[in-house]
Each structure stands twice: as structure tokens, then as C-alpha cells.
Amino acid sequence: MFRFRVRPDRLEEYSRRHAAVWPEMLRALQATGWRNYSIFTSPDGDVVGYFESDDPDAARADMGLHEVNVRWQAEMAEFFDGAGPDESMQELTPIFHLETQLATHSTSQD
Image 1: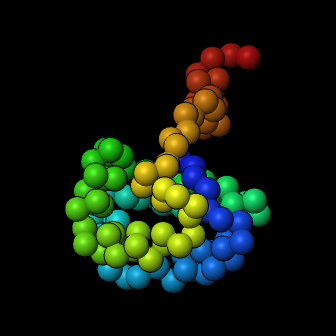
Image 2 (image 1 turned 90 degrees about the vertical axis):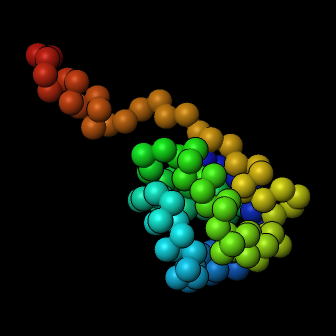
């Protein structure tokens, strides 16, 4: 999971662009191991993304090698003040997962 910011005045268009991601970009994400990828936004421009991968660092690095990603990032650059998500992405640290804790408690008597 990660977060970054979009210019709030451009958030509506940013969302529209993600409603129709280029098929070539979708295939590149899939080919580089991105699964269950979702993006969430808030009205103030905060963006939170989530994806699953066997090797998230490799998945991100491999996307950087795809020409379509270079084009996509260039298209999206107008939505950011300064650095885009590839440069400004902050990884979030997980601290709670319901199913993990439920599984722990289901093996013990409460």
C-alpha cells in the first residue's frame, strides 16, 4: 500500500483517466506481477494505492522498464505538483489485518 498526492483541482480528470486505463498499460501491470491493484482518492488530493505481488519491489522496477509506463507517467505528470507517484510514493506499513487476527483467535479459547 502506498500514498501520494494529486493536485486537488485536477482530481476529477485524474479519476476520469483511471476509469479508462490504456489496455497496453493494464497488460504491462499484469505481466510484471501486479495483482488486485486499486487506487483510492480523497477530495483533498490524497491518493492511496494498494496492490499485491510476490515481489513488490521487482514489480515496480519491472514497470519502469516498459515503454508504455514511460508514456503513461508523462501523460499523468500534469496532475502532480513536482514529483509524480513513482518518485514521491510513500509506502504505508500494515499494522492490522482482520483475517490474520481472527485466525489467531480461532485456534485459541477466548
